Length: 400
Image (cartoon, rainbow, N blue to C red; front, side, top):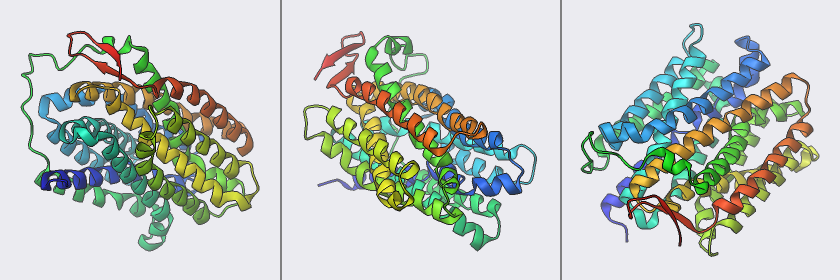
């Protein structure tokens, strides 16, 4: 039976997670409209889809340091304020603010997304993997809401600017609730004391790179879907609204696998079978959506959603399962998400360049499926039952 404190923390975690995807998924269904109304070229649109992921990756490594200096609770409040500001700023009729606000939103997501795994490890360590699945489910739901309601909100509110700005209300209300009910700060070391092992020690461990590269490639697939799937579907003959709802259905299907993947992974001695299963679903879903006849779009959307929800949930679970304590979880989270998301930013930008040079959706699909094959290789290493531990005074990898 969960305590009142645990239930409140889970609700807060869910609310924060709900805000960490609409900033990106709400833009994709409107990308064609933005190219027409705002005069964006295909290359500029590619930059717009790349910026939030790039700044997410650049900001994530800073999160443990910021959390140490001002406390994780205050750092999350600051991230939600930055997210609200970025979402509002990007809709102002001023030159360059669309990109500046998007970069601010990506930075806020990088901070919040990196801080939450270490907070989960601190508050409820015995159920960290399952709670990570619940948090991932919140991310998926937020992404689905952003994709599904983006075009209808244009019709209801009268402009794409109002549609994009409306998501700031969700961030603002979450920030207010977080400030009122955030967990009590735990004592932290003084600033003169080290906050953990040097990052170079983590970088010397192959396990760090295996988790990082798995995170990066699977995240790249996710942000390509967030940034370009509706555009690719429109090129195949979908209407703007239908493409948006197809993406929304795919993201909604992520809810089931985001929550269930950590449970399924517990059925075997390590996470490798579960990782390969979700990656296979992702590859098959992309093939059905981008190569197969249009009549296969709903099975394709469902498989893509199940694969991507499970992949991301397990990737976040690896951050807590591969570390022995909260401090290491925070450091690995910042390093893996920073490097992984910086790598992931190449995906949306690369798809934009391919579209500009005349690549077909089938060419893009086969390239993505090939990348998933490479990701399977890293999954076989990252999914082994290993754990980083520094209790002996040196960073070691133990077989668990």
